[in-house]
Length: 113
Image 1 (tube, one colour):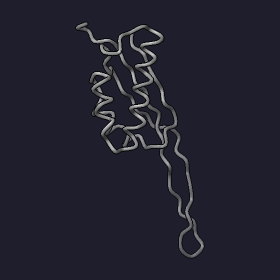
Image 2 (cartoon, rainbow, N blue to C red; image 1 turned 180 degrees about the vertical axis):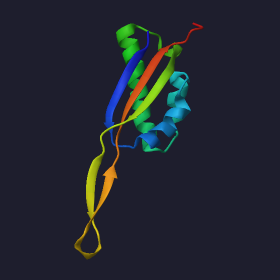
Image 3 (cartoon, rainbow, N blue to C red; image 1 turned 90 degrees about the vertical axis):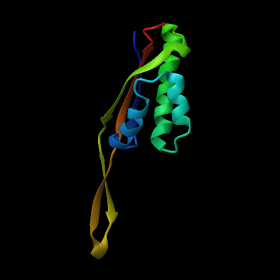
Image 4 (cartoon, helix red, strand yellow; image 1 turned 135 degrees about the horizontal axis):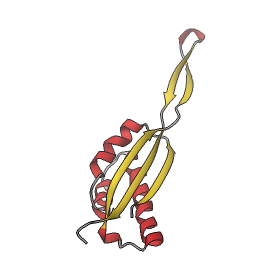
């Protein structure tokens, strides 16, 4: 049975989060956390915390062994966008968007074990 962890309204755009998600999808939890530890991207920090949360949920709630866990799916969806304004020339205001995302990580035990 797959175990999930959610991280909602992350202040990073979905496209930036998907770059990191593609690196860890399908890997073992320990390998994914080791890979993310050495990345300098803020997306990697958020992703590693969510993967660690999913692994902890599997250990505590479903009594699964952490060494046999692998990442089944990582889903990054677009969250509501905040519209903000910045002063521009001649007394005008320029709009810009602050994008955010929802992150879902699903882990399960390997089939071989």
